[in-house]
Amino acid sequence: MDKYMLAVLTGIIVFFVMIIINLVKKKLNLDRSKNEAKKLIEDAKNTAESTVREATLEAKTKSYEIKLNAEREMKTQLDVIQEAQNQLSRREDTLGFRDANIVEKEYEIQRKQSELESKKQILDKMEEELNGHLDVQVQELERITSLTVDDAKEELMDIVEKRMEYETLSYIKEQEEAAHEKANQVATNVISLAISRLSQDVVTQNTASIVNIPNDDMKGRIIGREGRNIRAFENATGVDLIIDDTPGVITVSSFDPIRREIARLSLEKLIEDGRIQPGRIEEIVTKVQNDLHTVIQKTGQDTLFDLGISKVSKEMTEVLGRLKYRYSYGQNALKHSIEVAHLAGIMAAELGLNQKLAKRAGLFHDIGKGLDFEMEGSHVELGVRLARKSKEHPVVVNAIASHHGDTAATSVISVLVAAADTISAARPGARFESFENYIQRLEDLEAIATSKAGVQRAFAISAGRELRVMVVPQNVDDLQTAQLARDIKEDIEQQMTYPGQIKVTVIRELRAQELAK
Image (cartoon, rainbow, N blue to C red; front, side):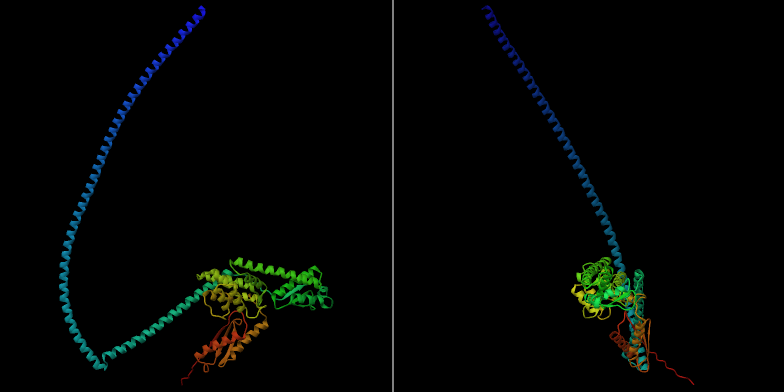
């Protein structure tokens, strides 16, 4: 029991001790918090006083700076005002000097006006005296020459007019001669440059289509039993096969170059294949026709690509490719057209014209030759019709229509195309014709000229490109000479077919002789 009480007593004592300890700790914490709060209040007070002092100092500094800036700006304004006052003073001095000069000049002008007035009076007096002398002289001249003043003026004006008319005509003639000379020089330079830049080797090709055969036995196989093979071949191709005694060759004859080429290629394939019969002939001809059509289209497209020409209708492209198989006097029509395109383009570039349009017109100038074996009309008419249908440029249409002189040229490019066509066709080696045709053409030219009244003799020279006609001077005057040249030119154009141009020169020479005894 005593132990229990002792434990309880001990526990109570410990409890009270703990309570006392906690009370002591709380008091200590309260004192510490008060000290901290007091310290915080003192710090805040110190901070506030420092902030007030800094703000007061900053306000004083800004106030001082504003004062300095205001004084500086005021001084600047005062300097500007002082400078303006100085300028005004200088201007006042200058104006004063100018006023003095003006007053002096006015005085000088008044003095000179006085001198001029006095001189004018003297001149007026002298003029009156001179007019009096002139009247006396005029009266004396009228008495001597029996002419009035008006008559003398009129005669003088007639003399002056005649002299001026003569001088004007002489000047115009000199300028015309100079202009012609300069134009000839420019034209010669342009053409020679174009020819030199295009210089190409041309190989004249023959239009005859000849097919070589391995042996003469092949001729019999091509003819077939009772001629059925050759009839089937001619019906399928539209050409004539000439099989004669000439060893090793068969000749294909046709006016249409496309048909002739189809027949040549078909015959070569049949000879190579060896199976020659009507069914096989039709099969080979059909295949060759399709292949050649593709070749023609590709040829036209390649030509346009090489020349840099675009936006050409499909029909024009195909007809252009057909020119590969068309020949004129042995000259390939496609190569001729390409050459004309290059020549026209070079000359147009030298003259500052549209080079692309000139090349286009030159390439298509003979486009009608790709159709003249199938349709009625000249190659010029067919070419114009095709170009208009394909909506070509009006300059291209005019170049096609005028390159042989059938229609007047409406642009410089048309003239260049005609010149390029003549250059390409006329230069040596470009074309050929048989000797008999050559002689016949010369004789026809001379016969046309000698058939005219008043013609004494006619000579075809320069390979038939120039015709010189001698007339009887007593029967043909100068005016009739010009008319005769035009008549001969028109007859040549209507009655003959020839490449390029023919120059007609009519010569009239009158010699008057007398013998002094």
